[in-house]
Length: 366
Image (cartoon, rainbow, N blue to C red; front, side):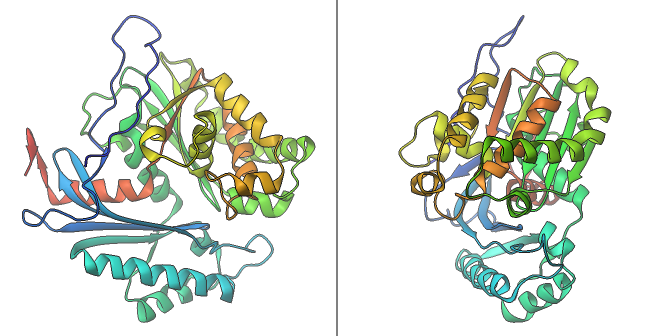
C-alpha cells in the first residue's frame, strides 16, 4: 500500500493555486514484502547521537518504495557532554541495534547500502575504534560524515515538502548531538532537481536534544530552565541568523523541520492516540499552533510525557530540549507556518544513491 504524506495545505498567501505535495522524494510503502524483479533493494542507515534508524527501499517512479524499516533509541552519545568517549554501555546497546539492521538488510537482499554515523562519532576520541568494532563484529562499514554532508542530506531528504511557490525556505534537523540548518534560496524549478543546489547558507550547531538536556536537565524543566536553553541555542544560531537574514523577507517564506521534536509537536497538535506517520509527514502548522503545542508540553510532568504514546519513556526527558532548539529557530526566523517532515537523512541517502545509479528517467522509473 502506498504511503502518502498527509498534506494539510493552507491557502496560498496570495495570487495562485494551493500547492500540492511534491512527489519527487516521497517515501512509498509496499507493506512488509518487496516486489521481486526489476531492481534490487537499497538500504540507508543513520546512526545518530540518540537513534539508530534504517530504511530499506526499492526504486519507484520518481521516488522509492519502503519495504522495511527499523528505529531504536540507543543514546550512543550519552554522557559525551561530560566526557570525550563513547561509553561501554552505549556501545553495546548500539552494536546490538546494528546487528538487527544487518539482519534486515540481508533478509531483503540489499544490493547497495550507505551506512553513516554523525555527531557522537565525530566528537568521541574512540569514534574510530567504535567504527572498527562495528566492521569486525557486525559486518557494516560505518562512515563518519562531516557536518556539511549531514546538513545537505537533511535537505535532500525533506526538501520535496517545501512549498513550491516559496522563494525562500529554512530547513532544520534537530538531532541528538547537533542541529543542522540550511537556507534554500529561490523557488524550486523542477521537483526532481537536486535541492542542495539552492542552498545559500548552512550551519551545524553543536547542540542537540541529548547534549542540551544533559547540560540543563530534562526531567523537571521550568519556564526559567527552558528560557535558559533557548538563550544558549540562540547564541549558537546567531552567526547563521545574520547570514540568512534575507530569507524571512522572501515571498511565501516558511520553515520546514525534521526531527522527533517537530513530529511529536505535530502529533500532540492532532491529539493522536498513537503516532501516525501518514497524518504527520507533510502537515502544516501555524505559528500559533506550534506555540500552543510547546506551551502544552511545558505544562506536563516527566511522568505525563513518558505516558504519552507519541513521546514515550525513552524520549520524555529530551523533548523539551528539542522544543527549546525549535523556539530559538522560530525567534530567529519568524514565520506564519511550519511544515513537518517525518523524513530526513535516510531518505536523503536513498535519493542520492538512486540518483547516482540513474534509476529514474524522464517519464518514470527506469
